[in-house]
Image 1 (spheres, each protein chain N blue to C red):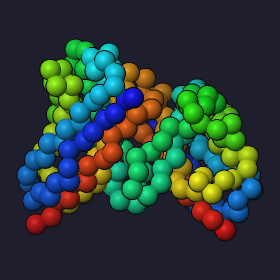
Image 2: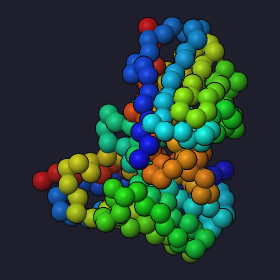
Image 3: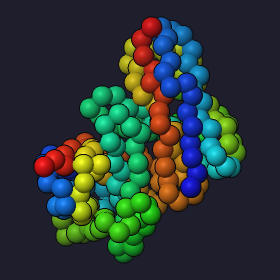
Length: 107
Length: 118
């Protein structure tokens, strides 16, 4: 089973700052990685799929990069509505698991 | 617009079974599958399994294979997830998500809280 590790566990930033979130896979998953945002009491929201493709309606300040085992989600300028928990998820190999998450909160 | 509406919260005793429903609208149900994902409070989501609404083919995570059954009813555009032999470790929010077989989850239900307690 592929294990996804996310870092940091928590990121404390101010609005307008740049956020860089990391996801590492225990073995190569090519570019089969997605990123989701979740807010309390809500379902996850798809942001990025296949490492770098923004989902429909996702603002351009969200970008994804990486391939193989190392991936990055970048939020170029944090907006107040961007605070929440971010999860990566691999779809390369069954079972199609998620990482433990990075919480982005207000500094 | 695509919508997935799940059934309401459940409270179950250990050893019991639970069935959660997920009614789809806004798209042709049989053209897509449904994945089920659960989330224990404070943890990341966990993929449980997938069912094709076209031919009812299924694919389960090994962890749940012996205890979960996924099904669909194309006459009502509804998917179902049954989980048996519940323990307190199964207390979680259960989500359905539209999945064309790619395991990219664009549309999600609102979640159903299942609480297992004696």
